[in-house]
Image (cartoon, rainbow, N blue to C red; front, top):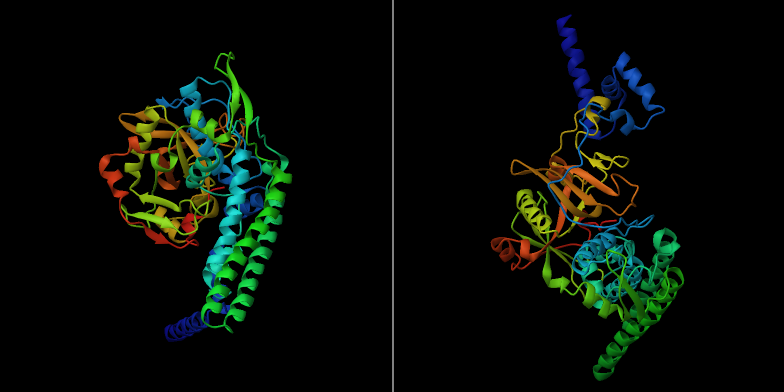
Length: 479
């Protein structure tokens, strides 16, 4: 009998090995796999519950203590913004950081910068970035990865702080009432679909025109060939301008025409009229922002997959063709916290981005890795650390918010608070509160004013950046 069992065991192992070699699931393998579900009374109860109830509802950890809302240090802010059904969190966050400073420095009452004004130029500049990228890659084959990436990502709502700084340094800013939100600004999907379709068509026409012109030039020699090549480049640029005229038209009817001059009445925090005068978007920027944003801030990141102390740059990760790619310094999380605390203590908000969907309660606004117990509910262990989650695409930065508060106890941070852009009724009074442990696991990016950066860390920014491809999964734009 023992010999027979040994033979059967070897046969089963052979069948499993054969299946593994073939890569498929055979009948014997399925029998073994199916033992993963025992059908215990607890299994059946959970299965019945999951038939009609969301996973997060059942995984909610009712034993997790209620978090208090006291913070030892908090930036003074007023009002909460709402990006609605759009991917403009990066823009709202960047402008909210600048808004907090403007309110504090100029004793303003309720006030916001127009997100719609900056968004108009963001979309126009991104259209130009795509079209010029198509021209720049005109000699590459259609199936080249860079060409494929461009056609796969002609335009989008998402972005990061470099876009904020490049755009408003170039075009200025205006108050919200001067260029208010429109339906298409708050609900961008359909407009984005139309512009993306048009840009893909335009990009195809540019490549076709170049291929035809190159073939014709190949038949020429000497000066005629050189003149033909120069004429072809001019033709592509002329085509691009005509294409951008059509994109401008779409943006104008969807978002409105950006003002070049406007009058604005300024009121202080008591509601008293301080002044009323004419501005241009650039003069308004000079008065109420007035900083060289491109040289006043650095972006730091906690990416455990890459070497700390190194500077990285992401190709095409910019909003303006003649602007800056996203450049960041990779640092350990504790170094980033020290700079964040210094900024908050000085009443200066920070641009902050994270993987907001993980262990997040949108009703309470609490971000806590103990909010949900998926291990017990599912009966399996989820054991990846931050590095492993990034490596396997299980986690990455998805949303930008404004970091405004920290609660320090016994010399260490225990929780943090961010101002969100999902409206005043979302989360905790329009904010989200995270434990320090959650911060460690799911915080990725922070934009810090240089005056809060230690000299040794600031010196690291002098390195030549390591260039990463546009399709690097860690660097998708925040939405």
